[in-house]
Length: 248
Length: 248
Image 1 (spheres, rainbow over the protein chains, first blue to last red):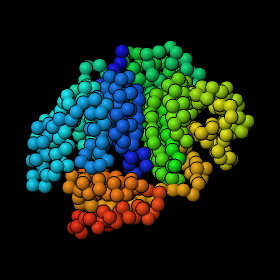
Image 2: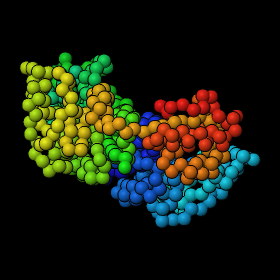
Image 3: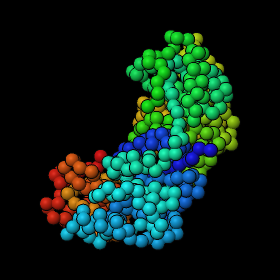
Image 4: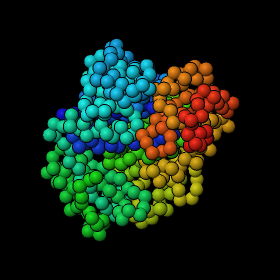
């Protein structure tokens, strides 16, 4: 069975449209690359109790959960408290994080800064580069900051921690087809190739193709067979150029 | 009480990182602009039963729900069937949509295209510009296509349908502060101005400021009072230039 993942994105700034969320797509690509199925994403406000409830629902039904946002010293940074509440654990101070904070802030260090070193009991830290804030892991929950520059910096570490050698294979075919004209064909392909996920994505205009078809699976041979069955069924003039490439 | 909204974003392509989701931020801005609180967003796969379950949970606990994606003629377009299932209603053919499809596709029209005119019983259509696909509404659920160009086209209509004269007011203050240094001050402001939502957003670098503080509320006077209390408490050198502006 495929390992499953969920993400909980925390932040009023996303729900009010103040910022364009940017972490999810990068995380999704990493998970796809290590063969993990991202099944569900929830975006919720900066509210401790709600975050804890969502986290408990997601971690009960997925192998791994990632949180993004709500990490910091201010009143609206409640993710760590929510994770502690979800697990029913007290917070304990991490000496490693306390050192990081003391070195970074020096004489400007406040009690509020120091609270960022308090983590739910049983935490693990991922990454120990000098001066870099590590990713925090509590059981099957990865707790990540929302600031995209910092979130993205953590992804290579996370990718390595999740790699098992299993991965997904993906192929895309670019066509000039209309969805309605090939919908029956696609349905037959989906039935004939049950272990391949077939996606159909029309584009608006101006990309040199009108419909992108994607084939995702665990086995290269199965993905190739489905993509080639499509190619064999379509007339040459309905294929865009380039037609078949590794999906990106 | 504020009217509440939720969004259900449907699509394997978002969960596998194939596309960067772009509809949510635009929808969130529209809702904020009409004074509606977007409380929750769920991103889920193209699976009819799961979509129906999510939709029922969201519509039971929010005034309005928006769906994005899964509209079209192919096997992975299951949103309409899921909405019908959620409401426990059959699908009926819309003569207006059938006309649109017949005019658009002419001799190339297939039975698959025509199925796009089948909607859950009790549907309403929003928008009747000739040749343009309208937004579909079923009770308190707005069913929108995922293609960003089409989704964004529907937003002016949706804004008008939701306007009640009530709105949110938002102000932003740009500073050179560090979050830890002013966390106590922000907490006091949050207590003193309970009807104003105060957000604190550090940026990575290179923007001419290090910390953006936002003040959201229903009343201009309350939002201004909170922002001005912050300005009065900070030394002049910690303010960026420009300091105070309407949030965008």
